[in-house]
Image (cartoon, rainbow, N blue to C red; front, side):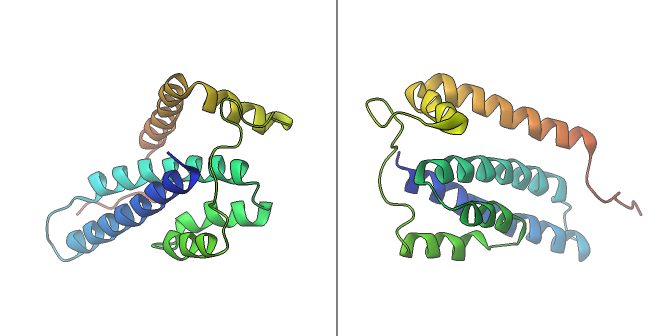
Length: 152
C-alpha cells in the first residue's frame, strides 16, 4: 500500500463517519432512532486512525510542518479532509512510495527511525499501532463525551 492509498483510505473514511455522526445527531433531534453513540464511536475511532495515518504520511513525504498540522487539524471540520486530499494530490505531495522501507533510505532523526522500524516490520507494527489506537479510543470512551448529555 502506498502513502497515497493509506492517506486516501482514512481521509475518505473520516468523511463517511462524519456523515454518519451528523445523520445520527439529526435523527435524534427529530425524534428518530438514537444512533449517536454508535456513530460517534465509529467516527472517534476513524478520527484517531486518520490522525495517525496523516502523521505517518507527513513524515514519509517530508511535508512542511504547516501542511501536516493543517492535514491533522482539518479532521475536526466535517468533510474538510476531501479538499485537503484533493489539494495535496494536485500539488504532488502524495507521490512516491515508502522511502524508509526495507532497502530504502537510511532514517535521520527519531521520527524517521520510528517510521523505518514500522515499515520494516509491517505485521508487528500494525498489531502494535492497532492496539495503541484501540487503547486511546477506549480511554476516550471511558472519559466520556466532551459535553455532558442531557437525558429527557
